[in-house]
Image 1 (cartoon, rainbow, N blue to C red):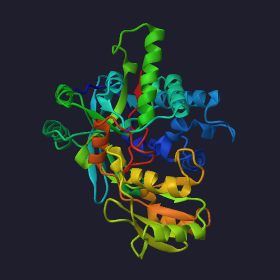
Image 2: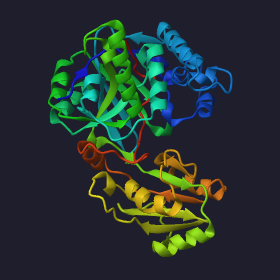
Image 3: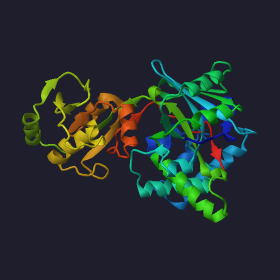
Image 4: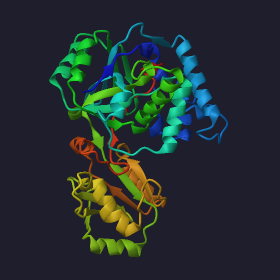
Length: 403
């Protein structure tokens, strides 16, 4: 059963939330971070992307990067911009757009739950990214950003959330990019939340596999160095936002291919019975839309011969039945002939990339369903890379967990 831990969060003073809050570290690159942080000395980007404050060309894993991040975090928390709660709290985090609202519990999850698969995974992690996140956490002595988890809906937990949100105004309300309003409530009445999640069999990683793994590595290292018992120290817990699965919104993770000759495309058109269309996105599972030479085409994905649950995913059928045999793309993580485009950028971005000549062909996907993610995780299987794009994204800098 799932363990959650209320904690003494560091929150920005509400009037300063707009100047501090920022997008997560892994949805932008260094140049984009630098641009977003221009003339914003208090932006939390200086904590999660500290290379922007160092000379151009500084490697992401240079020791100065980790030291600068720790320095920037310490400076923010010591300023009058942030205040730490005096006693452990549970926080409610809500994201709202014109047509979508999701409300979850911002708290700490247990490293032990991650290690024993109470928190289930669906992606592989890369050692280099693990190393990077681990060094950030150790140097800052903090988990600077939360992980997005999901769980099967619980009437009890929904009731506890409503007791907080319907009887109190939010502590912080921040208008973010893309028309997303971010709201945070806090409550010191935490026992019912802890009890409610103790009835939940499994939690599922939606977004943040590397942060979870790094939190586990940090706990293992510090446990030995500080000679403490399993589960007793604050570093044994890491911040998460737990959203009910029915509220999760997944967009497609689209693909673009750098080199596709006209001859090759003509072969594909005949072999897979491509049909020219005005439809830029597929309207059902098992189909993709292809953009090539200024035209859109519809295609049915080959069926999988594997009995694995993960093999039935559209992204797996695309990889195994199309990208691998037709383009020789065996490892999409490393193959330079393929890149990925988050669904939030839309099909206009796909057309732009192809029309500019940077890529020859674009593939518009049907989104993975949240139930598919749970089914794959329950089976102990893994999804192909870039299977899901969750939207909206949790803002960084609104609650910080230090240890």
